Image (cartoon, rainbow, N blue to C red):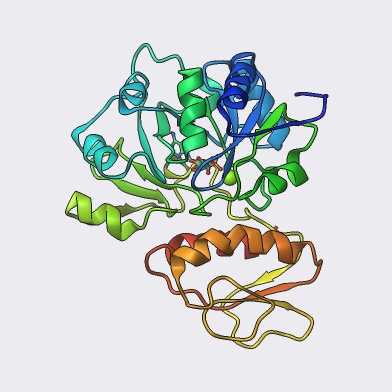
Length: 315
Ligand code: TXA
Ligand code: MG
């Protein structure tokens, strides 16, 4: 872990080179992706990955996603399949993580996979993330850049608030466009399985596959390692599906209504996803219980409701 102050870098080429050099040296660097800010460590360096778990306070049985710059790079680490190719061609770079069996000769630290025989990989779409991955020319393990269990960061300021002084640098390139983490699809079994709803709608994936995704069995830890129920949690108590908030509560709205903050007054789920974590950070700073309006379950609504259920879960 770094003891010196966290450096704020831009997405300019010389800063990206500096960020890549820090990763290469085993340091931790937060960077923007289109979903949320990630906290990066060189996925080949066990000590760097151990420092990453420590900086986040993350339980070490919760595996990390390896970020790569190309399909060719992904193929160095995992056993590639026809379905993987179909989904990667359709959605990479983008908010989709594929879980595939590790390949012989891969150089990913076993701390990244938390001892599993599979690896989650994705090519992020954010230009700063892609530039950083190209500059390093290696896999970057990156969970969301927040202390474990807290609200995910969609701005560099969120990262500073949670991790300042514990990481070497942050590449600041403004707010994230998608706003919720990647959708995770498991491809190591017979049928593709939706392991986590996220920034790519289930419906869009099924349209490319030509058949429905299998849904994960929440009671099977192997299909959802580390998907703890209480997660993305504000300090305050959170109530869901509220149409009449209590006067003591802050009201997070959706659609035309009177509320303290609105995820999307035009009831647009893409806009709501982009606003979700930022609005939760803002309401959390006001230190009062939070009531959330009902959000439809289709499209990105599935990911929004998944994160909200975790935010509201007992801890
Ligand atoms: O959008 C995202 O996915 C962001 C950005 C930074 O890329 N990253 C992210 O990472 O959300 P994290 O660590 O917060 O969530 C990764 C989740 C883990 O909770 C775990 O459940 C799942 O990915 N995962 C990783 N490797 C897996 C594996 N081999 N098998 C099953 N699930 C896995
Ligand atoms: Mg996370």
